[in-house]
Figure 1 (cartoon, rainbow, N blue to C red):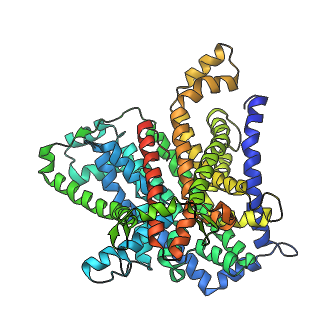
Figure 2: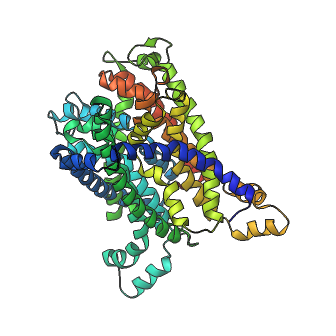
Figure 3: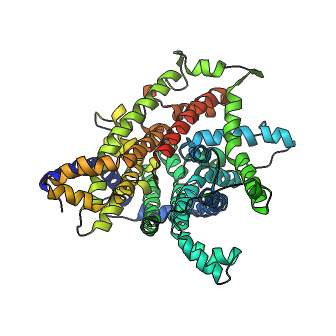
Length: 541
């Protein structure tokens, strides 16, 4: 274990997590499990209700189907990025990663503009494909949202597959599908399983996409919790549903962390295969045809919703115009959300910067403790500090309503920043932890042998070397903050409306132009963020 000062350093983030995550979580457990003593009556009532049972079954089913579709779209891309080099590869990879931090309301807007009754594709082919307001739309949007995870995680490990194993198998006659199935696949399987589990967790906890694209007919547990609390004001049912969701998501998160361990061990391999250039001869082969067809599918699947939003933001009264952008940057009061649209932009940026500061402050000591200290129940500690990743924004918002509604902190900017920090900090923790694992331990030992204290060795030797992970985590925290909707919608006063909440309200009022202009602004910020991440070269997952 560390020194007394190091332990004090760790105490700060632990207190933050207790106050802003575990106490709200405990309040939900109390609401759902306590009524003049311990009771399972509310959970039993939920499980006995046909509607709630269908919602739970649909939530798990759509998460499985979304994960399979995401893998089908992501694995070919992972192969291309791992094996080949081509002009603009880093930029393309950054652009393909942008959907992951796009506000889900923006994704929903893109699909409405494409597949709605007056959408571009509906008008082009002359009929409604039935994608909007259906389970098909939910699966497509989830795959759009999560396939960057598969590409980044699997391609990263694929590049580390030792080519000597494949060469030995080829010398023994293995080739094509047999070579991949018996040699390559077992070596990249930890990345496939880890990315699949993380995708499953995100789809299982999804809120905005099922709400907007699926509607109440295809509600998930998240939508059911939100409806119970915000519409029906039934906190007992909402809490019981949240408890069921927490139990299930904790199990899924445990599987993800186990898979992540295997992935991290494989990724530690020093072998790094240099991708070979994709030549003109490759383009004229079957491989080139595959890459071309795949590129067209991904362009239509990923870029078309983004282009639809961009196009809509530049059209006003059937003419090209910047009117929607003028409106979002005006200081005119908007009664729809009780603030100006410019205030919403300012709030999002302010909350995002504050989230960076707090999430790095919380993640650094925890990452250091997991990296440097050896203690009993370390695995349990790792699971507990990563538990916010398995908890949804709606559940967090419910907990804050139960705990802080009678305090001065409620309805302030700080309660929103705290919620954003709890949501974002697990990504910072993983980014920093990944960077720390890459540092040779003898550097730290050398600093100690020269008389440096433990904490000083960390600050002066290890932290500068792990700065890339800190930067990547900070950018990710910012992107997650400006994209967050569920908790912000539940907790924010009108004057603290964010861009994402404003987009959601514009969508509800069918004001697509303003929603599109705000979405393009968020898209630009997200793209810039991931271009920086690609330049830094560190992984978050």
